[in-house]
Amino acid sequence: MLSRRELLVGVAGSLSLSAGCLGEENIARCSSQGVGSGSQHLRRVAPIEGDEQVALGILVSDQAVTEETYHAIRVRDIDNNLITSIPLSNNRDMSGLDPEDYSIFSSEEGELYAVPLGHPPVHGEYTVSLVDSDDDVRATERLQFNCYADGGTLP
Image 1 (cartoon, rainbow, N blue to C red):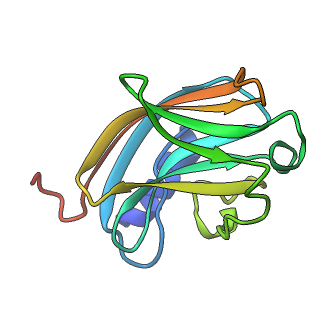
Image 2: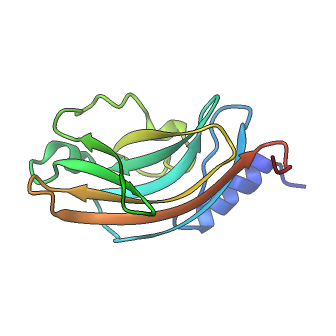
């Protein structure tokens, strides 16, 4: 029988956007689905699990971080409220997160950012956009996700 970790890794490989596992112990079980623009610069958006909480992982290309064309990452909730804005020009090489450390992002290169979402259970729908200096959208992905406590029961 497959372990939970092996199952999640297999599911991640078959879906365009899926949940990732971090560390030896999982704090949550996550599932997600998303629709993206297919941009080479906004590479992937997925929930990732930390030691104590779930975060929204956002992987952008190295070019998105270094080229002046791309100014920021905007994250909005289902009601189009701005959750956070990550300025790319001010954060070059500052995320400190290595995509190789997170199975869902390990097959791709780029700069990985994480937006804390809270302790499981946590659920939501977010739109992540890569914008230029005029705030025009260059690429967008929408993600729906559900993350429950790893115990397998509802709260």
